[in-house]
Amino acid sequence: MKNQHLGKQLFKTQPINYKLPPLTQYSLEDAIDEIELLGFTMCNPFDIVDDDASQYVPSADLVPHLGKEIVVLGYLIDWKPVHTKHNAVRT
Image (cartoon, rainbow, N blue to C red; front, top):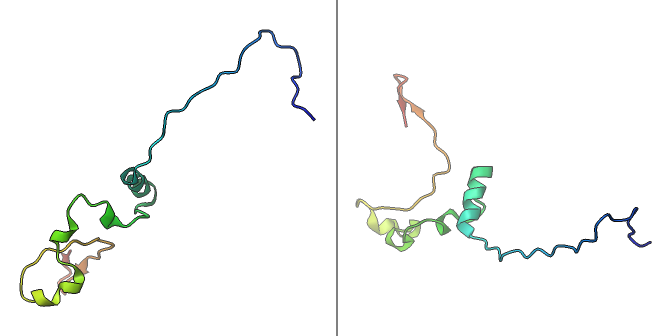
């Protein structure tokens, strides 16, 4: 069965052909949207860090740095306040 008009048209019009611009997708924008919607990213959080990860000590190489002050790059997942015996809260 063909798609037919139910009545006569008042005016003869040509269909409008819209042309969409090329759409680009950026992984950083996707990650920001995921954080806003879900509270976390679906991608590796270290892929979107605006820093050179090679300047930090990886966890596999911590042993040779025992007793030294080092800087590591980490991802905070959760934290919990700790109560002392005098009921003071330490974070």
